[in-house]
Length: 190
Image 1 (spheres, rainbow, N blue to C red):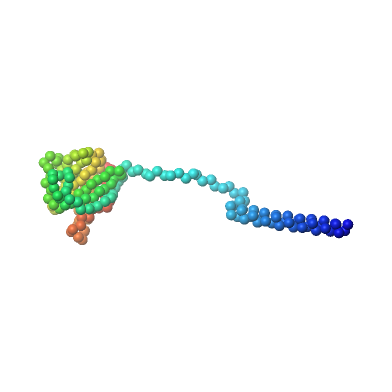
Image 2 (cartoon, rainbow, N blue to C red; image 1 turned 30 degrees about the vertical axis):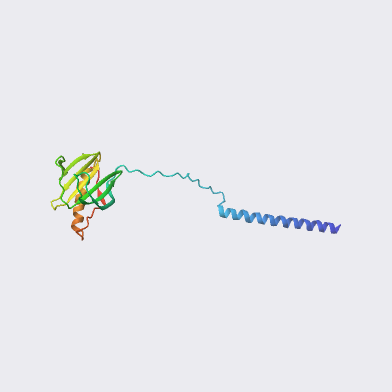
């Protein structure tokens, strides 16, 4: 009987050790999970679902940016048949495209173009295919033609500011061959 009692006691101790080993493994697993995933009764912050942002469409801005150019082109379409060499730049103001053409070749402006002023700048202009075409002739002998949408509200502001910046850049340019179109033309809506 003593032997059975000892066997039973050994069996219970073995069972307890086995359970202890099992509990130790569970404890280590629980502790590891708690450390990794931050248990301890803290609330897990909820995140808002991620949605794709729609690109912002700018209708109007305070600046016109030079998108391309100046590049050398031949022939100005709005003038009678010609092969005038000129530099062309394309500006964007919001969604509006503004074309600027600079040349040092003499331009004969057709007689049906209207004589006007933009601020204090004398210009001639015409309307063709929903685009306004302005021509400016400098006292130094160079010409700038502007091609803007008919409904562009800041035409004169753009023309005056562009010419002001162009004159400045031409005065400080080291090479007389280059035409320094300004990269940015400030045209606040006034």
